[in-house]
Image (tube, rainbow, N blue to C red; front, side, top):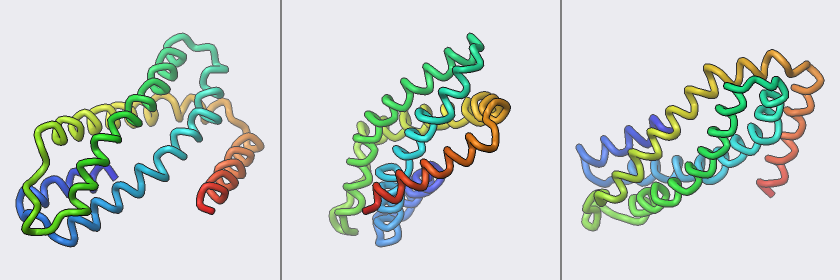
Length: 153
């Protein structure tokens, strides 16, 4: 979805507003409104505790930073969402582009998310994979499905 957001910004800069841009903005909003918070919750409930149980000082500090970044990304999302909402509710005549503040919000959002994802994939997920057994993984899966089925009703 970060790639889609990046493509949307380029599309708007090169082509201006169109229905395709509004649809892409809605897709990005839907993901970061619904799926991203669930993903962060999955990590907070299942992945981070497993990594913290390793009692590795460097990984512990990384996990604490990632937890803080979840809060930071949530705050940054408010500004990014507002920018995307302006795309959804615009038309070709009213679209004037993103404000400087909106662009700053999006750049910060990208930066935090990309570093965050990189650290999870390189350090946190491999560490969790070493300590989570098949029963724990199955339990995680059931919990994730259960929470998502309850959140969509």
